[in-house]
Length: 137
Image (cartoon, rainbow, N blue to C red; front, side, top):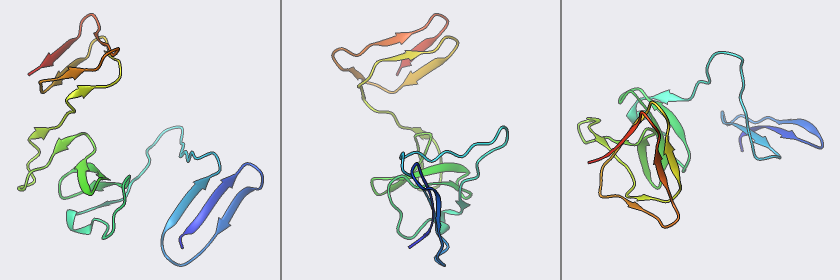
């Protein structure tokens, strides 16, 4: 069992300690927020070989071997930015879905690129703002 710090709207802050080395933050509202007026939030970092032995979906870490932030999802560690990492650690591929399932607007002054073909679901709209470009290759 991990050390738990829990924020509860009824009883306030609850602290339960153990010696596992794992810290778990809980909130009765289901939201955990780390704030600072300026600065950064540090996430765990380590080499590819130092990845957790039993990862679970949603784990995020900085991979110092690959130089990228990665997320564990559906049995695979992936670049959080969506790039696929090849066997030689090359970061040459960018992955995208093939179906647009929710309306989206490319913001003014931004460009977007998608590898096609692409299907846009019924009732879904993709809007390209003035001064922007969406390229499907």
